[in-house]
Length: 301
Image (cartoon, rainbow, N blue to C red; front, side, top):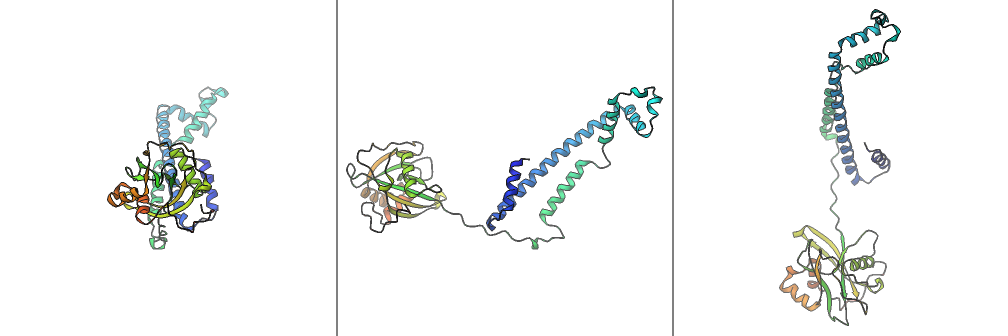
C-alpha cells in the first residue's frame, strides 16, 4: 500500500469537511477497502501455493519429518542414529520449518473468502442493521458552469467598424466564427485572462489597462452539452501592432477582420455559422462601438 496516500487520507479525515464531501470520502474509503481485499487475496493465494510446495516436500522426506518430531519428543533420536552431537544444524532448522509451515485443518484461503463475503454482507445490510437506519445520500448539487472570456479586438485606424474573428476547429463550436478568448483560470482577473489568451491565440499584446467591459452572456449550448457565463471585453489594438497570427492552427482556421454590421447580417441569415456566445451578442443588442455608460469597476476587470 502507498504509505503517503494513507497518511494524506488520515490527515484529511481529521479535518472537518462540508457535507457534500462526505460521500466523496466514503467512495475513497470503499476504493481503499477493495484494494485491501485484493491484497489479502494475493497473500492468501501465495500462502496456499507455499503450503502445497511444503506438503510435496514433506511427502518425499518422511524420514526427515519423523526424525524432527522424534527429536522434539526425546533427545535419544540422535544417539539411536549414531549422529551424536554432530547432527547437521540445517536438519534441525528444516524440522522446525516443516512444523511451523504445516497446513492446519482449515485452508487459509477459505477463511479469506469467508471474511470478504462477510464484508460484502455488511455493505448490503445485515439483519442487525436495517437499510432504514442508513441515512440517504445527500442530494447532488447542480453542476457549476465555467466562465469564459471573449475579447472584441478593434482597430479604428486600419479596420474601422470591424472586430477580429476566427473559425473554430477541434472543439465544441467547430466550423463557427468566434472571438478570441478562453477559460477564466483560478485567481485570474478578466483582463489578465484576456491578455494571456490573446498572446496564446493571436500573438497580440494589448495592455490590460486599455481593456473595458462590454457585455456578459448566459451562453447555454444544450446541443453540445456546454454552458458558460461569457464575459466580453473591448480591446483596442495599439498603434503599430503587428498583424494577428494564427498561433493555434489546431483550434482555429485563421483570423480575419469582419465588420460588426456584416456579422449582424450573418446572425440573421446564417445563425448556425456563429459561435453561440457571439451570436447572442449580435442578436441581443450588444454593440462594441457604442458601449453605454456604467462600466464595471477596474477591480472586477
